[in-house]
Image (cartoon, protein in one colour):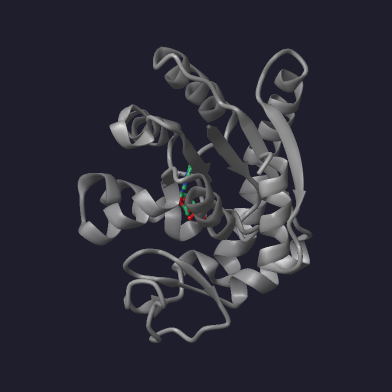
Amino acid sequence: MIILLLGPPGAGKGTQGERIAAALKIPKLATGDVLRAAVRDGTAQGRAAKAYMDRGDLVPDEVILGIMKEALAAPSAASGVVLDGVVRTVPQADGLARVLADLGRRLDVVLVFDVDEEELVRRLGARTVCEGCQTPYMGRDPGSACAKCGGRLVRRADDEPEAVRNRMRTYRAQTAPVLEWYAARAKSGGPRVVRIEAAGEVAAIERRVLEALGR
Ligand code: AMP
């Protein structure tokens, strides 16, 4: 099953994506994680992406399409994949459809995470992430240890208020149209689009998500 998670920054795509991947025993691809690892490792891709990411701007579509292509063609993605934050513009949605068609595959479902903006800003202000495995945490101090891998928890530079405001603007301008793009295609044989009420307890949201996936 190929599942695409759409939603604004802080909507819980990373947290729920991990849980869906574990429940369905398929990998998760998060372009943000791939890019942060590239920045940390100082690769050419990381050096090119860093300034965009720190400002809360989107990195160019060609970079994302390259990451998408490589990850989807990998043997580990053969039985499915959870795509977290991978499609953020209409050209990327179009590109994903073409990459999948070339592989003889298709997107099964688009899950749209709905949370109001006040809650998003609150969540991002309280978020730390593991420097190593990128697991997000709420309300855990920077410098404490990741429960999963023992790595150090840090604040993301783009979770600071100015970058958050820019990421929200970017979402409204460039990613919200992707929802309409998929909604239009759902009527003519495209992937199913399911909206998920993504405020409240993580476990309750997970139940809604798994139910939407028929689990
Ligand atoms: P995320 O971890 O998903 O919040 O992504 C962090 C940052 O990585 C974003 O603010 C963008 O700068 C960049 N990024 C991640 N995924 C994409 C994408 N699909 N298109 C463009 N930029 C992306």
